[in-house]
Length: 79
Image 1 (cartoon, rainbow, N blue to C red):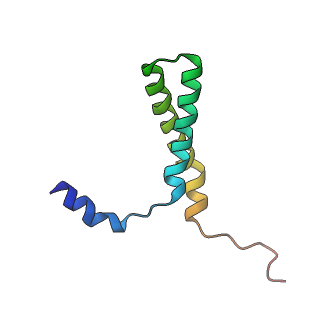
Image 2 (cartoon, rainbow, N blue to C red):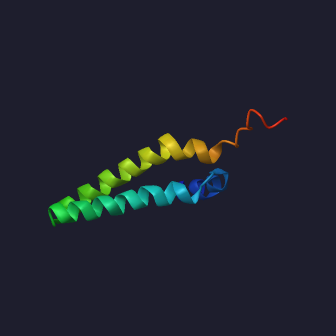
Image 3 (cartoon, rainbow, N blue to C red):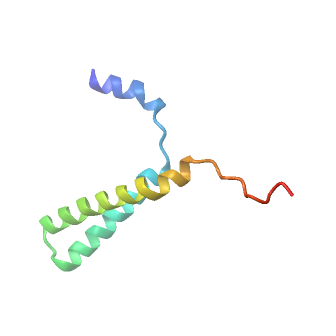
């Protein structure tokens, strides 16, 4: 039932490539940094999770507004 509801509502969602790739890039960067500092599975997991959270915050705070808003007209464009 839940899967059918998700499939039914999925076309109404607005997805962009940046929404997926930016947090993924931060997660991979976090993984690399964590593995350089301490090559353990726990460090890898922490690095990925912290990277994902940081990437999601970056996307939500800066790029989401730029992608979703239409460009603003310039002030002197009417001359």
